[in-house]
Amino acid sequence: MNTNSNTYTVIYSIVLVVIVAAVLAFAAMFLKPTQDANVKKDTISQILTAATVEGEDILATYQDAIEAAILVDIDGNKVDDLDIQDCEVYGTADLKRQIAAEQKALPVYIFKNGITVVPCYGAGLWGPIWGYVGFEGDLKTIKAVCFGHKGETPGLGAKIADEPSFAEAFVGKQVGTGDILFEIAKPANRQTENNGVDAISGATITSQALGKTLNQWFGFYQNYLAKNGAVCKQACEHCTECSEVEPANTVEE
Image (cartoon, rainbow, N blue to C red):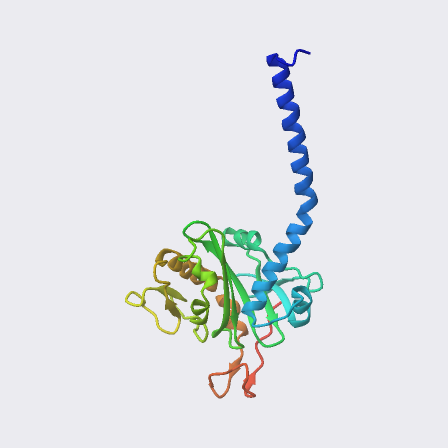
């Protein structure tokens, strides 16, 4: 075949493209289990942060610290269990599906230290944002949070994940009632006090997007939180530590 002909050039290009595509497809298939495992470990690491649990071996720490991992519906009733031994958790793709799902299956992670963690997922300024919120035994008071994002502006919107003081601002805050369950806004614009935090300076849009995301997901979990929060007979401020705490309601099967 004439190597200078157009036919040769076309055939050579097609063969080269097919070979490269095959190599890339094989590499993607070969690496997928490792990528999935890394994504799972990262997700569990964020859940552990919200549960205030630390450990070098993330998977082993999770298995040792978790008491129950369940799925609940919008009415707050248990619909299924997540496999603790397999470290089964809901990733961002799973959470995204629940937003529009008619029959929601919402993950709840209950830890032995008395903290219950629930997730959230929504749209930020440039891409998805998500997070995990750890509640004290009353299932109203926030113990810790951990947020993540895919493409928010470094030094601005990215601070929802990178700025420790922003996460610390959530500690002790509570889920409210009515239309605004939780709010993130500029101090002058905030309509709430105990169920809201200040927006990040210079990142108002991302902050408000996170506030809307939390408000939406707290709404999803509202019935579960109301049904299962521990009630302190002394009405003290530290329900997870108080000996007067009555057991939480049993989740309906």
